[in-house]
Structures are given as structure tokens and as C-alpha cells.
Amino acid sequence: MTRRSVPDTRNSRLPHPAAKRSVREGWQGWDTYAQFYDWENARTLGRRDVPFWRRVASTAGGPVLELGCGTGRVSLPLARAGVELVGIDRSAPMLERAIKALRRCRTSHRTSPVPPHFVRGDIRALPFDDGAFSMVLAPYGILQSLIRPRDLTSTLASVGRVLAPGGTFGIDLVPDVPKWREYRNRVQMRGRAGGADITLVESVTQDRAKRLTTFEQRYIRRRGGRTTEHTFDLTFRTLSVPQMTTELNRAGFTVEAVLGDYQGHAWDDRADVWILLARRQA
Image (cartoon, helix red, strand yellow):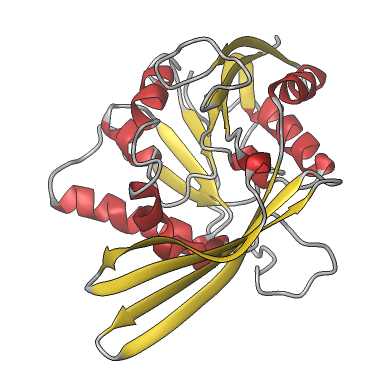
């Protein structure tokens, strides 16, 4: 299958995260997080999930869409492996870093057979043609940033529309979100980046009724005699495997596998990661 024309929505007029809203949105905070995202993830998740998604994407037989591609942490290795990939993200600063990373790959001759295409857009209303993709991937808990039930419903419907019949939808859930205990101003991480000392100070709050966990992140950057602080919130929704399976069934998907790690072992509710591989019904 050949992908039809994909509109470039990087300049789309999306609501700015700084705008005041009466209801919090799950995408708020990610613009500020962009400058620290790769630094933090190199010390936590790293690239443990990349080989898994590379194996899954290699079976697509056509173009692959990554939801919440961010800085290209997953997108770029998949593209270098020959996957025809489109990455979509709402955050312009995240995408700017993905594009810069792609340019660095070209400069160092680490080119991809088919360079990835990065698009700015909302995963609740994907700006692509019907059936444009053979596979859609949602790595590293991206669906848990959809903090209202209707946001998830809209996203699954949108994925079902752009995914070809019989295509695979791969989802990675982070199971430990609701297990975080509440605390204030705990130093979680220290290190260096770009010639500066960086300290992450974190606070966690739980809204058990709405199944939401909010991480207040305060990054303190010290370079020479200058100190700057960057504070933002990231909110995630608890999604269980049975709940996700039910939502997928309602959206026209059939769950074919539930895995408990990136090596493909079987899932149980104590597993470190919760991976669902679903197929869009014809």
C-alpha cells in the first residue's frame, strides 16, 4: 500500500499550552519539558523499548504512524531501520528537536532509507487520509496523557479511521502511574547537560476519583554563577489492560496479544510494562 498525500500541519493554529483554560489539558507542560526530555529519559527508560518497536514496525508492510513522537526518540531509529514513518506530536518544541536530530543524522551520514516525516497535530483528530497507514504505534504511555475519557474515545476513533483494515495498533502503557505516593519537592535526579548542572525537583499529587496522577517538575539549571528554573506539570491517567481492551473493542479493534516486557513475554498485572497489540477489524 502506498501512503496518500499527508498534509503538513506544523503551522496549524492549535491552542497554545500557556493559554488559560478552566479545564486542564493533558498536553500542557510538554513544550517546557522538551528541553529536558531526552536528558531525563536517557537516565530512566533509555532505549529499552526501541528494539521492540523496531521489530513490530518491520512487519507493517506499509507506512507507520507514531503518536506523540516527541523528540524522535523512537521515530528516528525506526526510520534508520527502513520503516516508512510519520511522527505526529502537538508540541512544536518537541518536533523542533526531532527535526534537529534528523539533521544531525544526515550530517553524520546516519541517513534513513526513507526519512521520517514529522507533523504537528492533535492525535484526537488525526490530519490524514482514511486508511493511510498499515500500522499505528503509541509508545511509552502516550495514551495516558489523554486525561479525559472522551479524549481517549476520540483518539481511538481517529486511529481506526487512518489505519487500514487489518492494520496493527501497538500500545504501551505505564503501569506504575497510580502507585506513586504523594510527596513534595523531592530531588529525583542530578546530572550535567550542555555544560550546565541540572537538578530535577519533583512533587506528586493524586486525584484518585478521576484516576489522575500529576507530576510537578522543577528543573534547576546552574551554569557558572547563573541559576534558572523551569516549572511545569505533567498529568497522566490510569489505564488498566482490561479497560484498554474494552475501549479498543468498542472502537473496532481486536486485541491479539498482551505482553509484559519488551522481550515479548506474557503479561500479568505485576509486569513492568503493559503492551497491547490490536488489529483493526475489516
